[in-house]
Amino acid sequence: MTSPHSDAHTPTIATALTTAEATAVLGDPGLRAAWSRHRAAFTVIGIDRLVGAAAGLTPAAGDLDPSVLATALATHGGPAVVFAAAAHIDLPYNLARRALSLDHLTGGRSGVLLGSRDSRGRTENAWSGAGLGADAELGAETTADTARAVVELWQSWPLDSIVGDKDSGILVRSDRIRRVDHRGATRTAGPLSIPTSLQGTPVLGRYGTDPRARFRGPGDFAVLGGLPDRAAVATATEIPGRALAEASIQNLDEAAGLLTAGAHGLLLRTTAGGTPAETAASLLHTDLAVRFPEAVPPGRTTLRDSLALSPPADLLSAAPAAFTTPSANVYR
Image (tube, rainbow, N blue to C red; front, side, top):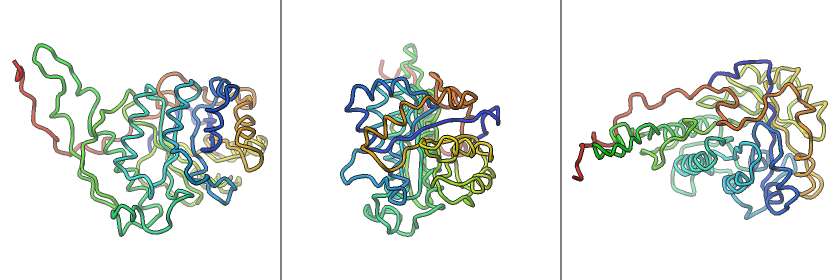
């Protein structure tokens, strides 16, 4: 995990929409207007993919991918967007590419919340449908390895390698693009076909419901899910980095109590009951600035800068170059 916010006493108040709620927002002009004014530090799209049936939020079959919904919502303003993904459904290369594309589209105001299981997904070994990772069990180790593989891919093509030097004819210092040969629960070979973004890499969050989990592997923040009680939150704060407690927008007094128990912030979501449009409205019309005036204000800079997160450690410092050094004036 990267360093926590510069002021450990300043909470981060984020929100979350289910896939059905996000779809309802996109289809309703009034909800889109409320979204554009929403004052969360960021909003997770597709939280039902990680929460599952236990919370009554199981996504419907055939629903849109959270990364697609996040991209569509980002065109209507609003807070930074973080989409939900699961290690055993989203192969690292595909996940890394979708996330970095969104990060470019939003000007560095996006991220991924990575969990171990998708509530619609298979229960056998990770990626077995693709014939990959036959020995990768669903759980913390596979999720940590997936997180590392994704960050390595994000870091493989440095943005400042694009020089556009007309005099030399060199557009990209291709020798600075690094090869990714990840060998773990999954295997990847890079580099990614997209350069890093304005914020270096998208913000990476980790989701889990076990308060004893230590969220191994890289990440910028962790979400303790399952609407935890104060004792669970107190345990979760032993996690390095920022620990956000999942909480209900329908009970803000209880949510505030999780902050006093030691959580560094909250991820507020709706609970089952009502149509997706009704529950989305209850979240988007809550005045977070009044209820949590001490919280980190949403920023219009990159999400990483807005949350005062440090850049992730360079995981490819020893990686070989993917290409040879370009020659000047080779096309003249």
